[in-house]
Length: 407
Image (cartoon, rainbow, N blue to C red; front, side, top):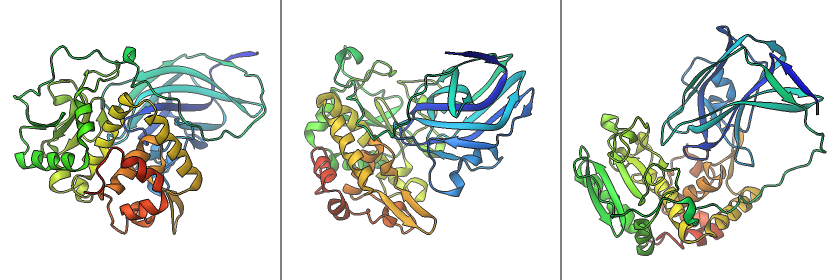
C-alpha cells in the first residue's frame, strides 16, 4: 500500500449512524473555510435526501431557514459530502456544522478524502459526541493538518443487497444497567404522575391534569397489560444516563421546557419530542392542539411510545428485532410505502428504516394517521387500518401481538 501525505483536500465528509430518531438527519449549515475564507464545493454527495426541493443538500450552503433532510443509505449510514473539482490547498481549516432539533446526530465522524483512479480513499480526522437529546453543533479548527491517505486494495464492485441488521443487545444482561436497588418513584416536586399498570406517565407541574388523563387513556386503550407490566422491569443500556424503567415524560411547549430540565437529568439536554432511553419525551400540545396544529391528538406520543415499547419487547423477546427488520426489508423490496405525485416517486417516512417502519405502521394501525390530502398517508392510500391490512397484512399481524388495535 502506498502512503501519501499532503495538505490538499479533494472531498470532505461528515457521517453518522447515530441520530435522535434513527430515520432522518436534518442539517441546516455545513461550511468549511480556510483561514476564514469559505471553500465552495463543486458538488455535494449524500446518503439520501427527502424528496422535496426544500430539503435538498444544497440548503446547507444557503443562508436561509431551509435544511438538508438527510436519509440513510441501505446500511443505515448517513453522510453529507462536499466535493471539490480541483484539489484545494489549505493552511488552517474551520468547520461549522449546525443541526435542527427535530432530527439530529448524537455522534459524528469527520473524514477528508481524495479519489485515486476512481476509488475514494478516506482519512478520519475526528469523532464528536453529545448525550441525550442535544443537537450537536460543531465549530472546529484543523490548523496545519497533514492528511495521511492509504490506498486500498482494488476489489470488484458488487451490488450490496438489503440485509437484516444483526440482533441487538437488549437481552444481554452484561450490556444493561443493573436493576435499581429501590423501585423508581417520580419526583413530586417536578411531576404530577400516574402509574398505568407499570408504565409511569409523568408530566411537568405546569401541565393541566386533564392532559395526564388523556395520555393515560391513550396508554390504557392501546397497550396490553402484559407489556405495561414489562415496562416496569425495563433496564436501560449501560450507555444511557438513567437505568430505567421506561416512562413517558410530558413537557410543556408553552414554556419551552426541555428534556434536561427533568430531575433525572438536570443538564443542558435539548428537545422534548423524542425517545431517549429510557424516556419517551412528548409535549402538552399533542393532547391539546395537535403538534403544529396538524397531527391528530396523541399521534406524536403514540409514535414515540412505540419506539420505547420496541426496546421493552426486544428485552424480553430477542427475536423481535429481526422479525420487524425482515418485514421492513420485504416492504422496501415490494415498494408498499411509496407514492407518486407531480414531482415524482417518493417514499413514506415508514420506509426510512426498521424503527420508523414499526412506529409509523403502528400509527396507521391505531387509527392515528393524519388523513389530510397534503400528507403522505393520504397520498399513499395508507391512512386507515383497513388499507394497511390490505397492502401489508403481515405487519398488521405483528402489530396486533403487542398493541390493542380493535379499540
